[in-house]
Length: 193
Image (tube, rainbow, N blue to C red; front, side):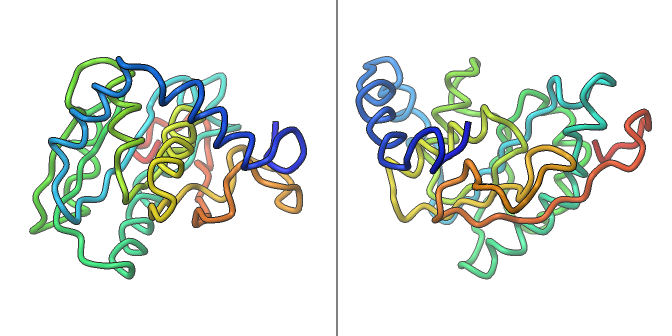
């Protein structure tokens, strides 16, 4: 499904407002996420689930490290980065492979809670985002765009290897699309995936 073909940005905004942001449970999670966020913080969402299994890695696996490094460099052009928060389904991987990308900057790991809904709220509440190559992450970005139309959101230019870039995207126009490096060997145990 794509914005501009199957639904409009307005449809997405209306759905988010009427169906997602009316939940009292999600509102509490958003408030908790906002309470732990620091001014000037960039939230980096890293998803390490099914796209990095042998079955899907060749089709969806991107070099996460190089993508995050370039996305953070782009965020530095928008303004100073006063902290980075990695929200992920694999925080240990982020600690091991991404922490050194932000020397001298306070780094936090995880959301204000322990569930995927807390992670989604953390992504949605962040005004400065680096999205993963993940529909979960995109939904967080969609909600963030509704909550703050001026949010600085960077997402991967492609979701799937070999996808025709001339087709309409499922990203809102305001998001910055950053090219990705695909993992060359889907079977490689390299840390980049």
